[in-house]
Length: 378
Ligand code: ADP
Image (cartoon, rainbow, N blue to C red):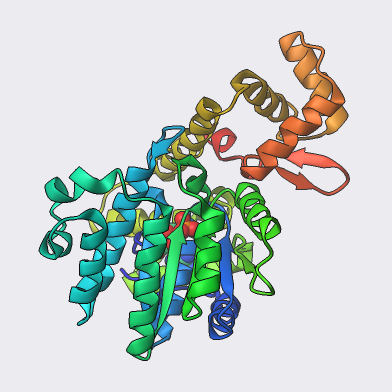
């Protein structure tokens, strides 16, 4: 019931493997550097950060979860401010100095501190429009100095940081630089699901104004290999007190491609079914997985400027048996859609698809769909 819990983990004993990554993140935090945890959705980024923080002491954590943003192309600054204030109040509620910081936020908004602590959105919303990047930094500075006074350091965890691009009027570069300059007691940890996109954002921020040695250290979370996937499932089923035959294990490992989130969901559903003597249909879980992948892709298409082109490119690759070289893909697009697409344009499209993790580059100049979930459904 623990390993297969489908919420992010916080306890190390519930978090399988990843020893190396935990040590890396600890090390970055110990050196007061910034960290970026990169990897596809459901690979365990949020869990890694929570588990690592749970192993440490003497810090306060402020979480800004941009995964809460929806499907739209852009959001006003107010939405960010809301998420930020929610996160800050959570820190405040856990600590004795709540009064001081809620006063600072309340001052900025021209409302009563108790309205902040009680998250009285009716009152807060009135002035939220005037709350800008500068105000956000002002609050962070206060949290930084208060945590220092209390012998602690501050960790700001921005989950799904690539979504920051959607916030109108928030300047990530100046936000980070203000922290760099004024908050030497603060550490930033970000996670990003679209690896290439996140890298681009971080590179841009780092190039704009160098951090003078304080850069984002990247931690990349990869899929489990077959052996690890098997160990994970076996450990989970042992915990559940369930015996599973090899064939089922092999099938699940083949289908869920080493993504812990899907393996956990499979393990949980399978255990539940066994305990309640239901029939187990792996395909149902697989469908859920495929749906999520296609939801991500649909979302991406909606936001892109040439949805047809991207859709055609993916279809062309799947027609090629899920992998092919640039010229093979070009041929496939051209014959399927009666197009005359140029190599350079196709190269550009493939680059963007790689950035979002919808395709990957495999050896010998070939491109491939990362997981053939949809085709496995048959
Ligand atoms: P991400 O932030 O990358 O989307 P999460 O941390 O939310 O991923 O993890 C997705 C799911 O997978 C959660 O249910 C989590 O408990 C599970 N999970 C991920 N990695 C592991 C792991 N190493 N051991 C156990 N469960 C894991």
